[in-house]
Amino acid sequence: MDTHRLVLTAEHAMQRNVFVLAPETPVLDAVRERMVRGYSGAPVVLGRAVIGVFSERDALNAIATARYEDEPPGTVVQHMRRDFAVVGPGTDLFEVASLFRESPIRRVPVGDTTRRLLGILSRSDVLKALSAQFPHRQRSQYERLQAHMEQMQGAHF
View 1: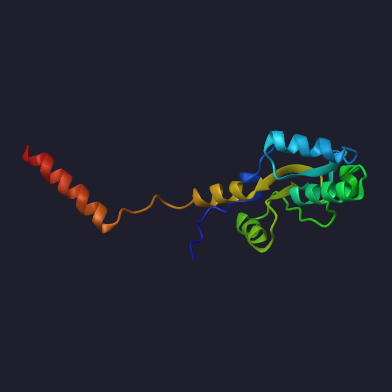
View 2 (view 1 turned 60 degrees about the horizontal axis):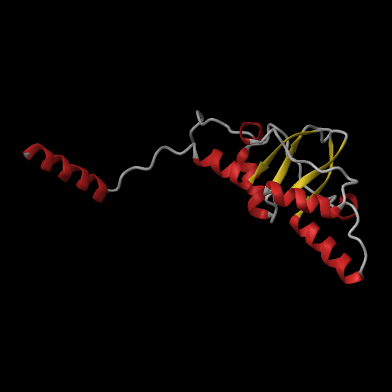
C-alpha cells in the first residue's frame, strides 16, 4: 500500500460558488433558473443551512402532479427532498465516489457539522479530481514501436 498517496478530500474538489434555492421559491421559477444555469438540482438553504435538495426529479414530480390536478405547483419547500446526504469538507473523495456509485444523485452538498453550506460536489468534480491523480498513460508496445520507427526514419534523412 502506498502510504505517500495524497488524500484528496471534498474540500479539494468542491465548487465554492453554489447555486442555491430559498424554500419559498416558486417551483416554476426554480425550474427556469436551474435550466438557465444548466444544473440538475440545487440545495435548498435557509439562512446558511442546507434544509433540502430540489432535483430535476422533484421538479418533474411537482409540475406533473400540479398539471394533472389542475393546481399551481407551489414552492420548492413543498417538493424538496429532506432525506439527503451532506458530506464534510474532510470527507475522502473515494467515500464521495462510493456515495455517487450507490445512489442516483448527481450532486452532494458539502457542509460543516451544522449543515452550513460550504460548497457542492458533482460527479464530474470527483471524477476529474480522482483521474488527475493517475500518472499519464504509458504508451503501448505498438505506440513505442511506431515512435522508434519514426526516429529511425528521421535519422536516415
